[in-house]
Length: 112
Length: 115
Image 1 (spheres, rainbow over the protein chains, first blue to last red):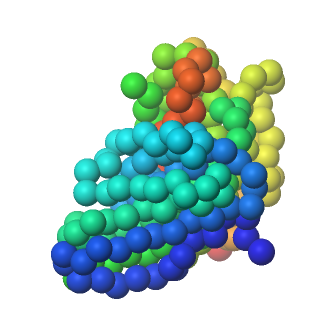
Image 2 (cartoon, helix red, strand yellow):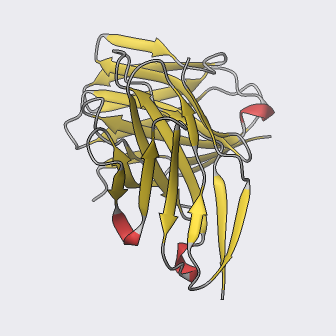
């Protein structure tokens, strides 16, 4: 089983709809992140959380919100999806600053 | 603010030849540097990291990287490229002197190994 699991893996939704992407991890890490990947732009940080009571905006948080339901769960929501939110979304976890991040398999989101 | 530059969008190399994927960084504190690889339709896989110590770091699949503080670079290298190395490679940096633990990625370099 994967250490970092994202659901769904693929999703097509209509403009204006609310959608939630979910992430769960079995690594026991306290730090969790949401990134989006666009061709030619690399990975950009949307939100990050260092524990259940700590939520921080990243580089491109507008149009997104998150919820840290438990240490192992971190959800990303698009309140009203728009086409330029079409991208590949990744969840990641780390334990300490000097350790590598572990990534989920990604969620490919298409907003039509 | 921390940043990463990968100056080449694409690198082409013949199978069996050495490969280099370039990365330069900017952070205010001590840099923690990472390389990740992404195969089509897959998540990012960790290759190697530099935290402290020896400037030459060895990682998975025969890859290595050299930390150069004066040039603020962390280039990824492999002595002999394989066709299976073809993928998208990302360099990332974290500021070890700050408390935020944010990981900043470069835009990625597509490596194509030609048979």
